[in-house]
Length: 593
Image 1 (cartoon, rainbow, N blue to C red):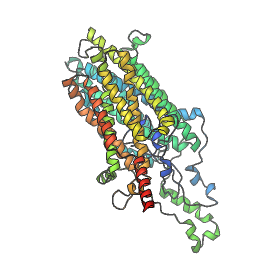
Image 2: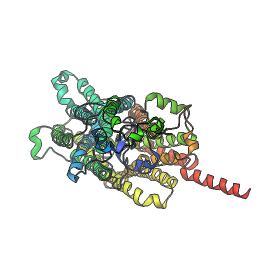
Image 3: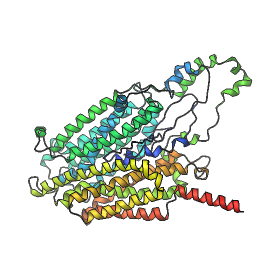
Image 4: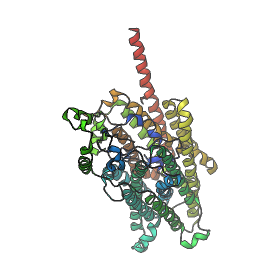
């Protein structure tokens, strides 16, 4: 199984990040709260966790290939097995980790979230200040989801099979984190680097614009892809008890990192002691660099992984060290059945999630899944339409600033002031997303149906977008903008819980390619790919829409998609409770007959 299948364990402390990684990881831990009882695999010689990323996150980076926990169980038993290092290396019995160690394992997630939130807050303003035409600036987000869709499954497989002395996860965490930092560095220093490379004589700094686009691609792809090996590392090195605590800490660090990033972007650094560093983007680069590199060092040095031993090598070790020490009664032919490995009905779920498997699953999708995918697509379209361009909207529409104005003009100063206030608005949505995730899990899901929660989250978002449209007071807009966090919680949580319920139905699971059962990992990868599809659509058309219809159009588009989602939920989405009621009615009808 690959890194696109490993799970993000459910946890009571669901603290989503305050940055774009909310797409990947905001409520990722809720996604698997009901999955674990459905997942099993067959592995003859090892007990270990295998992982993979959402195609989607973040999440969702984090999101964002949605991750599932599978705990393979060894089916070979021997009274001598516990004495073998072969079994010890991949045993479920991991040492207990301290809170400090668990925090260090996930610390780089804090740093990544800081970088992501800075990207969300500042990318569009930076592009407009570089004189990028309004018709095309959103295209900067176009490439990264396409690359992620293609290469994240490949990285997942490579991580599972990595034989580095560092282990399977840390090499990927290190490389992807470095590329994420390179991406953030290019975004924040694009203008300065462009001047060094020849932009000083150009009316339009083409080199700087290219560097911003390259930086966004690096940061988006690397941060989304690093989420899976980070969680897989935690699952690999911690025992069951520590995993819940570790994932709580992981979520808290992500949420805190996103909030810190928005706070850094919202502060006016021009009149502070740190102005000796340079302009504001250079100050932010220094702060982000110190934070990120410190957190990366903490994670890389937190624990020592056990290097992977290939199955062939383990078979040889087992043959040499174990078979000769089996009890005599098992050495006879008539008793060899004691060593036989039973077939696993879920073997199809062990396979890596590949593009071919996704394609085959698309050709024969259950009607429940098709309607759920459409519903989630509408939610992500509504979310991206507003969140990616919100700081620019505040700067231009509310503060009446102009990013194209001369840098010493009043209009330019007003735009900068609006962008900073937009960062504080995004901070409120991040906090509300964290709070609503906890409330959803602890209280609302016990009292209301999934249909009701889904419908009203979309409706509240639409109403708040409409409310912001008619407001010019930033202090009223700020609480209304927190509704972004509500819809984010819904689209990051409810669809995956519905999938877990669908997969309890054998009729649903039988709707797959010939000779296979429908795998949970495949379906969640499909659901995760909706995140990439929505981002691609928005990045392709949104700047063209805002340039022709004004900045307020992001609110109209967001409200429209959200209201369409309400309509779709009410009339077309098939919920697990609907199937349960149908089965109950069929049973009652059969009893009457």
